[in-house]
Picture 1 (cartoon, rainbow, N blue to C red):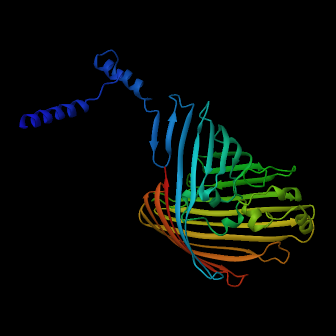
Picture 2: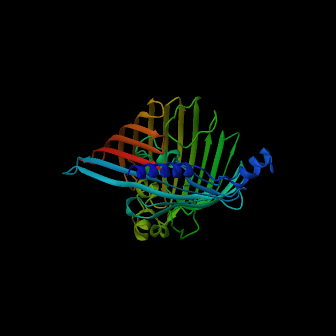
Picture 3: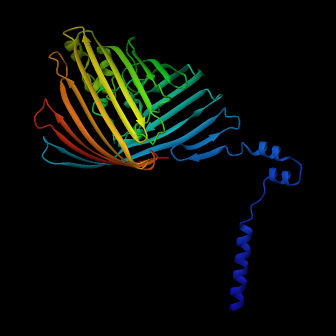
Length: 412
């Protein structure tokens, strides 16, 4: 028995040693034999790693010349919500998948011809979000066609995975345009100190057609005087002051024909104008043949050494063919500070919306105060966020709300 154990141990040790021996590559053999030089070896192996994985960016596969590249990744947001509504008898306690997104992006034929596809499976539904091509002629001019977010408010354009709070502000959720189908020109100058985007869209929301020849026109200008300002709300210990000043406009003429095409994810139409649920007859009765609307935004954001500040103002004018025109507006102001750099962050936000004009088709006057705390394990790739919002509705009795949210996010 002793001899058997000794033999078995020797065999296991020999197997372990052999298993740790790695076979040399052809390039290594040729270099060792002096057939190729060290420089030849480096040239032959520098493109060997064509498939990579990076947390937050997913799996990347590309060709040696870089003309073809595909990147696959995703984002999961799992959330708990506790809602205390003054008008409800019971408090709502709810677990949900807020977002479950998969994307495929990269370039084909050339590094200048890029594409992106993104699908959201959150809430049990499958929704196509991004689906577009983009061709870059040069830094000052690129052209995108397909479905993506029109270049309107900055907070809406900032990914839901890169927010300072669990979700966007009350003002943004009232005046955003969501996704839409269209064509957009864009570009940048002076190392992204000046950026522009100008596009024409169907104007009825994602995956929706346009039943007439009226399109939504959207444009945005960003000025970054101290250098490029990423679409990312927290400050991860930037070493220099960064400032973004941005402005945008969106305008469209709606008709009764549009009423059967509007998707509710365009909140300007759904909440601010409240026309996504009416039919052709109701539209004509309320507004006549057409309704013109124009929306402007103005924002100021800044970051420095763990401190972040953001503010944005929205103003909407609606001008129907029948009856007087009316206005609506909203804003948010928010700030955050990382007590432990790149780890622990506290934040506060105030947001309000108002449309009390006598002629307004829909009237609202609400405000929201939110306090939040975030813990980053690996920046946005792995983080936990919690916030508490006190929402007041000044136009409706027993409609104030207190909302607690706890969310974990992983980007893979």
